[in-house]
Amino acid sequence: MMTQTSSAGVRASGRPVIGIPLDAEDGGGYSKMPWYALRKNYVESVVAAGGLPLLLPHEPALVEDYLDRIDGLLVPGGAFDIDPAMFGARTRHDTVVLKEGRTAFEVAITRGALARDLPVLGICGGQQLLHVVLGGTLIQHIPDEVDNALAHEQPNPRTEAGHIVRVAPGSLLHRVTGALEFPVNSAHHQAAKASGPDVVISAIATDGVIEAIEHPAYRFCLGVQWHPEYHISDADTKVFTAFLQAAKESRPS
Image 1: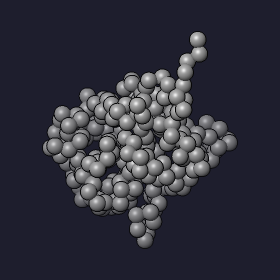
Image 2: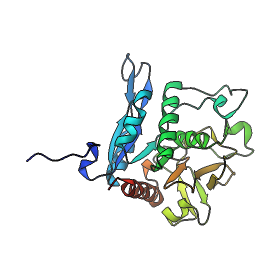
Image 3: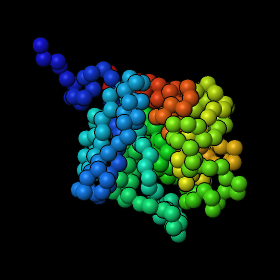
């Protein structure tokens, strides 16, 4: 017996469909030719929380088609930075590395997801991109702007904690995790700086660096500076669970 599919097709499984933009390189490492890639633990975390991952190549002309087929958007991290010109900076720090094609695609699909009020979860670089999309600016290099900064590019493995974060009482992150403090891993040299209109800073590190942002005007709009896909604590698992629940609730009836 043939299974009937909806107009969105991929939604027929009953699992919320989570779009995840891929990383991209022009060549080297995996292949001498241009390639796409994504760490497995992003996908595994979505599946474990009840979702169906849909990996998204950087095709700007297909943004609306992608959005028609997903119930939530996860913007992952990567070893690159957002062009400072995007948030009004007149100079670029020497450490800044760009992937302009990936960034342009992620900006377009994030704006589209927010316009449709689809749940959005930004992780590490994805948090920074979400912060800029919401009208914020970034610290271009933490050691140059934050006195007595923690080791936000932690020397120990990403599977271990690097520092703790302190959560704003009553925030979405607090409601999701049930915690006011928990350990996280840390793999970034940039961070959120000035916030856009109505953006809530929902977690900070002990050195004052912003670790999570959210926007209460949307169904679920959360950016975390750490990598919850490594599940350092129960709080990480709860972030994915809440994101998938919001995506499930956003599905068309």
